[in-house]
Amino acid sequence: DQQVKQNSPSLSVQEGRISILNCDYTNSMFDYFLWYKKYPAEGPTFLISISSIKDKNEDGRFTVFLNKSAKHLSLHIVPSQPGDSAVYFCAARGGADGLTFGKGTHLIIQP
Amino acid sequence: EAQVTQNPRYLITVTGKKLTVTCSQNMNHEYMSWYRQDPGLGLRQIYYSMNVEVTDKGDVPEGYKVSRKEKRNFPLILESPSPNQTSLYFCASSPNQVFLYGYTFGSGTRLTVV
Image (tube, rainbow over all chains, first blue to last red; front, side, top):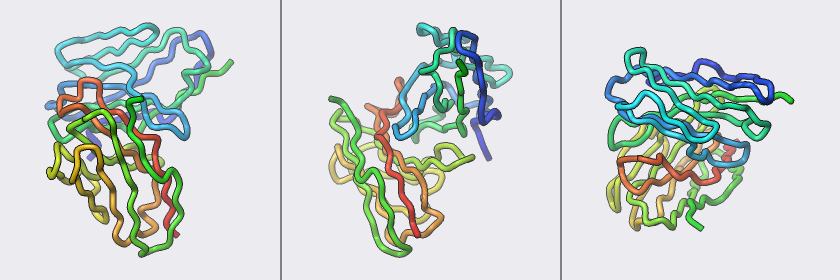
């Protein structure tokens, strides 16, 4: 049973426009959420996070929004740049055993 | 440089031949974990360790063993590899179980079992 869902396997966005990546979760015990970015032949790297007591967190071009009632979070990238082309993973913390990851969304930034 | 180092990066082996993938971190992290990444399935946790001599199963532990004899090392052992263990493996570490900045991941080990 998948507890963290990223329903879009891929997303194509024009350079300069906004990229919006979505993530849904089912476990109400999740209290902290993270986004990771992964390039081919590299390990995932931490991008941005948000606590369940907040609804928004910004870091430069990246903003994460959390809607607890809908169990939904989204990552906004504005403006999108060619270097943003990567696979993005949503992850959630539910306890001390570790993080639960979604399947990932492949973001392609078109020139 | 703070990092998680996995070896080897690439490995092709035959069914049933025991192998070990090594993982070492130089950040004095308490927590370490192994994940596998498969197309359409994302990252799934195999085993994790909260501290030395403390290990526990993740979501997909069948066919794998781990040990944590020292804080810095967390090897993944496949005693009798099978083709369904062909995957991309990542070792990860975290200072503690709060996961404030998530994990630091290694660069991955691509394993092919024929």
